[in-house]
Amino acid sequence: MADANLPPILNAIEVYMAKQLDELPTFSEDVATVLNIKTAYQVNKGWVGDPCGPKNYTWEGLECNYSVSLPLRIISLNLTSSGLSGIISASFANISSIESLDLSNNHLSGPVPKFLKELKSLKFL
Image (cartoon, rainbow, N blue to C red; front, side, top):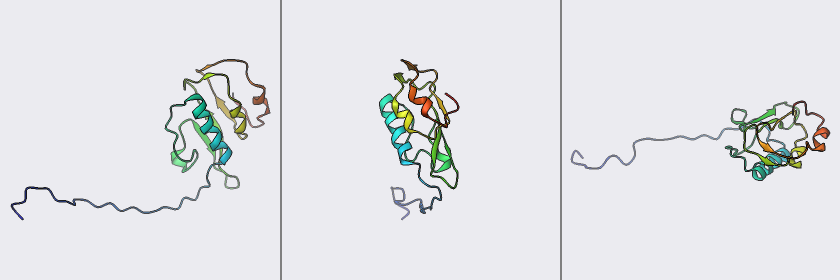
């Protein structure tokens, strides 16, 4: 085929293998809450898949606990300078294990909601 004018039809091969992930999925209420927050505030981050897993692909702005005895929980949410506007949504109260919530450098209005004091794990606001 020395006279062929076209390149070869097949010039590479790819092999894929399914990998078992040992991590549990993120607590479903935490997932639903951050997705509600993303929609309500039109958060422009590449949040796709499971927020906490796999560990190397945790969503931008989130930190999770990776305790063996618990389901994965969101413990930190950093939405600083994310263009948020309006009042602070009551949805934040649904992330019951949150320890740190950073909403600085946004355009939020209104008083600090009382429900934030009900978050027993919250240490940083």
